[in-house]
Image 1 (cartoon, rainbow, N blue to C red):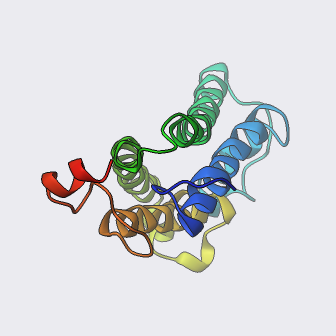
Image 2: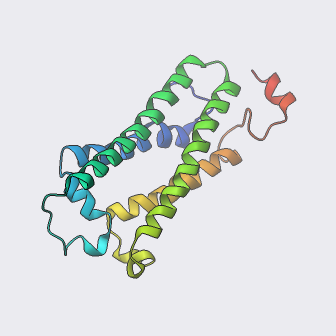
Length: 176
């Protein structure tokens, strides 16, 4: 791994490698295998075993495929944009941090709205019965809350040196 002051250590592993894989994987699962119908039925865990995995109507299939496209987009943006920032701004940690911070802000907002939509969309008898959640539900809620927490830790400067966020403008301008 090359030097990347804005995303050191654990942050680099999580945001440059693990998160892109974890967001691109559902897209591939929707499009290739096990398919849109399987994914659709996984979204509400209490119903996954009670509903047949038959064909979905064309609107539902289209919506699930488009959701897969959103997952793919998130993974590609994190992976490709963060690598471009690392490579193009190798010697400018202030600029790295400003761009990465903007991306992490957008992702944090998306994290919260995704979790709220996921919880609100679950039937009331499943919403807070964590033991009944399947891997898809935990991915949509538990793992997304973990990612949100790590994004907040990044902004707080936990486990890393800050170059822009949390610095006075004079200090930030002198470090690059």
